[in-house]
Amino acid sequence: EKGVDDRGFELWWEAFTNVSIFPPESFPKESLTTVLRLLIFLTNPDGAIRKKDVRKWMPSPPELAKLDNCWCMQQFGLSSCLSLGARAYFHLHQYEDASSCARLGLLKSSKRF
Picture 1 (cartoon, rainbow, N blue to C red):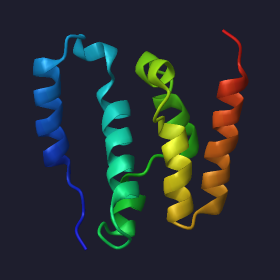
Picture 2 (picture 1 turned 30 degrees about the vertical axis):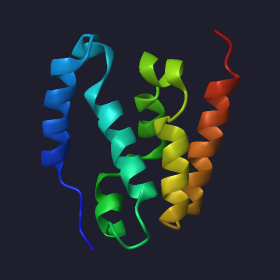
Picture 3 (picture 1 turned 90 degrees about the vertical axis):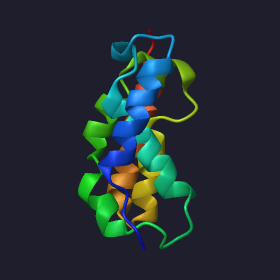
């Protein structure tokens, strides 16, 4: 089992901000790196990433909801921190947190703009 450290994300962020046509502040670093971390965790075979390492950096359901407030998570809607967080918490056997993420996601999606 291997963990996922911050070095790769720092290198990715530097490359992303150098080639993006959008200004860096329009894509919040914490939101994007959280989505990437969740995708990496969820798409790897079971046991490839230590669950204890994921639990260390995994934001709480309310924190994941805040990370979803940026326009890029609202606009693209294909992978949000809350929806991936719910799946990750389920995979970590933290069912109450998975349920909280799902409820917060439903509340956010039912709001009218």
